Amino acid sequence: MATSPFIDGLDATAARQRLWLAALHQLAIADGDFSPGEKQLLADELTRQLPGLSLDDLHHPGAPALVHRFGVGTPLAEDFLRSAVLVALADGHLSPIELEWLRHWSEVLQVGQAVIDDLLNAPTSRDGTIDIRCDTDQHPGLLDGVRRWLDGIEPADPAVARFLVRLIPAQCPFERDVTLFGWKVVHIPPMCKINPLYEQLVALRFRCLCRLEACEGSAGQPPLP
Image 1 (cartoon, rainbow, N blue to C red):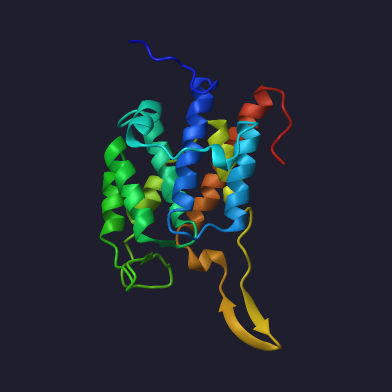
Image 2 (cartoon, rainbow, N blue to C red):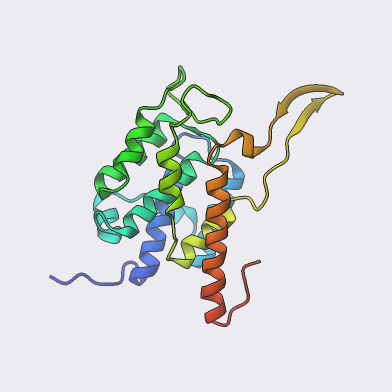
């Protein structure tokens, strides 16, 4: 039986984008640490790509839906998992439930198993959280496989490229001291010192911008602001 290319009035491309954003939303709220900024980012991207829909309209996808839209062992499936790993590791730590979702998606889509295994074998804190920091020499090669894997992201879908550009900051946030009543409470180092994947994030953002420039230039559209 042939499968209709339309779901809920969306063509196949729009349905895939909706599924992609729904899965990233599922990952973002998994550990309960869903900041207003993250929520607004996803909401804005959803409105931009699929007008008329809100985060409340997103149904978190099951394994059959992921396989249907991304395939098994395909470059598209790998790009999806890469973007999920990127979102999960952006703040430098990985909660047990985030890691479980990544493991599940890797198993279902049959991509990225070696990288997920590296993360599963990473040392954890007392609450089971994996803290990924570049200022430790205990496991210097831990993220080498993840780095190479993320360096391979070449987003073909302009919608995904645009989302990643907005997700990744254009500049490294500067280090600063947080003071209260004139007393230094905490020192926050620059993001490039906190997150060892920062170079991968910056390089990926550049590739996404190049992709968008090529697509929008050929379509005669103004560049991304």
